[in-house]
Amino acid sequence: MTRVALMLALVLAWQSLLPAQSKAPETLPTIAKKTEGMKKLDGFLPLYWEEKTGKMWLEIGRWDREVLYLHSLPAGVGSNDIGLDRGQLGRSRVVKFHRVGPRVLLIQPNYRYRATTDNPAERRAVEEAFAESILWGFQVAAEEEGRVLVDASNFFLRDVHGVVQTLKNTGQGAYRLEASRSAFYLPRTKNFPQNTEVEVTLTFVGDSPGRYLRQVVPTPEAVTVREHHSFVQLPDDGYRPRRADPRAGFFGISYKDYSTPISQPIEQRFIARHRLRKKNPAAAVSEAVAPIVYYVDPGAPEPIRSALMEGAGWWNQAFEAAGYKDAFQVKLLPEDADPMDVRYNVIQ
Image (cartoon, rainbow, N blue to C red; front, side, top):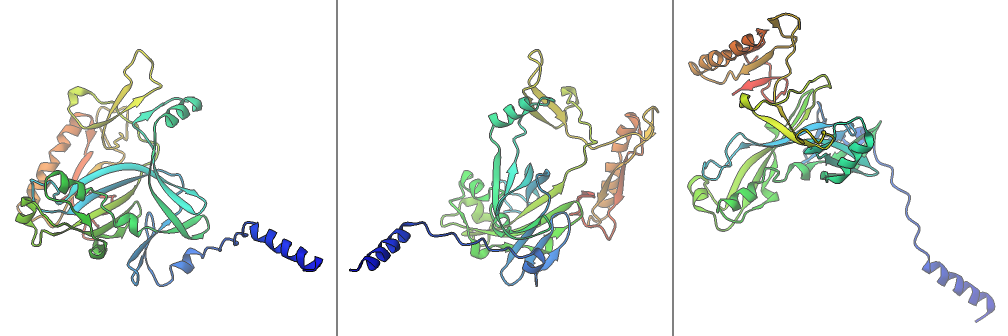
């Protein structure tokens, strides 16, 4: 072997040991380009329905801004003994979308433990002492002017309501989600200015159904229900919380505040309430800046409809005793209004 050939062989051998150069990252398409041919459902968090693949795409542009995420069971199993009933509400969570490179994380902060102080170091110490929860990770498929598009199909087409676990806990058998028999339920997948609603049909399969399932499901080896996802815009910062009084006997929330003085309870309790302010704060009785309005579902037949409106209207007496005039109102839901629109409080 000549000296030149030997040197060439050594160079080639050395190059083979070097790590392969990484390919240049591919340029992501724009959202407009990626969603060509898809049906757009515009609203709070824009959705794109891809008919040919059965996928639901989600457009995200509200970075690190908290929203309310909750789930429910609009179509249940039909057995009180199991406890998966129609209209059952699931957990509600405060979440936010956070982008890290090509990935979008859906983060749930831990508000069970807080430090309501002006000291940032004290707040950070509590935040780092207790774990937060990352509920999901999305891959960015397109981007445009600070907004991104992600495939949210698997996020929505999952058993977020815990049907499998409930069936197991009630002795109804070991079931699993069957993807081939699950799909988006488009009639109740909608978008509004302040909330985004997605509903899915899910089928769970198992070999040894329990007694309660055999009583109510036509083919108990295949249990089909519907689960619902909601993203809701949170109100502005003008809301003033009200501390809970045990004498009121009302529902509320609680959390541990580690900035509380040692002489005071660490557990802080507040009531859940509507936002209500007087037009004239100095008056003993005043109209509200924005009255609380509940709408009765027009699908309620008479005489039930009238009874609902009359009975709900009695609440106004309590508000008058508290110094509010006409602050609680009951009306019939307008024909052009959708009960799924969070701007309407609906009595169904």
